[in-house]
Length: 251
Image 1 (spheres, helix red, strand yellow):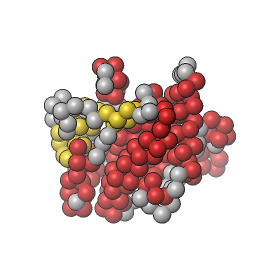
Image 2 (tube, helix red, strand yellow):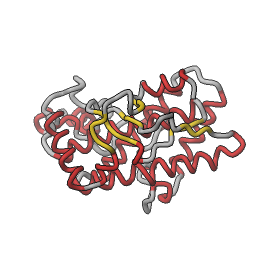
Image 3 (tube, rainbow, N blue to C red):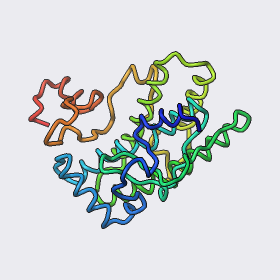
Image 4 (tube, one colour):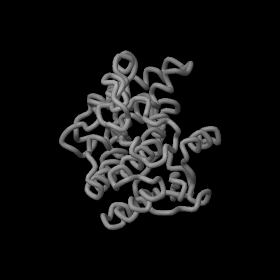
C-alpha cells in the first residue's frame, strides 16, 4: 500500500497500533460482561439515556470505521483492508487501531473480482460485524433492525459521496456492481438467515424518492446534541413530525 492510500484511510480514523494508544481490543467486546461495561462507560461519555441508545451510536461509528472504509477502498482502489476482530482495537477517541506491523491490504484482481469480493465481504460481515452486533443486541436489547440500518446508512452515504465525484467509468461500474451484490446477497454472507441490510439499501433514484430511514437511530434522545443537528437529516421521526405538525416534545 502506498502513502496516498494509507493517508486516505486515516481520514476514516484508521491507524496502526503504534500511532494511537488503544483503549480496548474488539475481541474483548465479544464478552457480554465487558461489552456491558463498555456501553455503560460510553453511555456516560455521550450522555445517552440508556444502553440501547449507546449501542446504536456506537454501531454507527463502528460501521463507518470498518464497513464504509472497506467499501470505499473496494471501489476506489479495487482493494480492501483485512480486518479480523482479533487485529482490531479502539482508541479512547473511538478510532480504529490495527494491531499489525503492516497494513493488512488485500488487492483484488479484475479477472476474478466477483469471487474476491464475495470472500472479502463474507469475512467483513460474517466474521466481524455480525459477531459484534450480536453481542451489542444481546447486551443492550436494541433492535437488530436499527443496528443493521445503521450499517446500511453508512453504505448508502459512502456510495453517494463517491458518485458525486467525477469518477472513472471503471470505478462507477465497480460501485454499482458492489451495491447490487450487497442488495441481492443471501443471508449466508452475514452468517444470518436473511440479508439484514437489503431493505435499507438505496442510492440514486430510490433514495431521491424516499431518503428517510425506516428505523430511528435514536440520536435525538442524547442529552446533548453533539453534532448540532437535532435530528438526523433522514430521521423517520423528523419526517413524521413535519407531516403531523407535532412538536418534538411529543415524540
